[in-house]
Length: 107
Image (cartoon, rainbow, N blue to C red; front, side):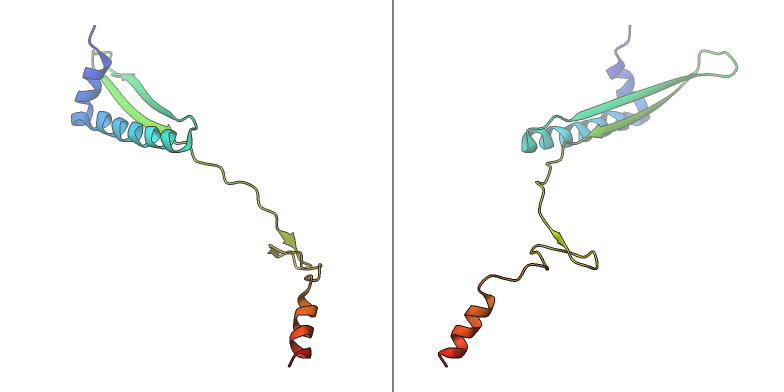
């Protein structure tokens, strides 16, 4: 039995192996950076010849799931128009008026 790796090395002059290697490297780096799991898939479709001969058509596709770090949630407040703000637009700022009053009184 001929190893599948030999066939893949011959597929498009090694292009399938090159692409799979690149994807594997990207997944492996992301796994190291994130501590999350990743995945690479090599799919090979084998189609027989329509005339029944021994010819086979191979179609190789390579895909990956690169782990990405999740950003933590952040709190925002909606105003009456639906725009989002980091501070509550309905809430007055604490000490805002007293700071300006204190500066005005010392002048």
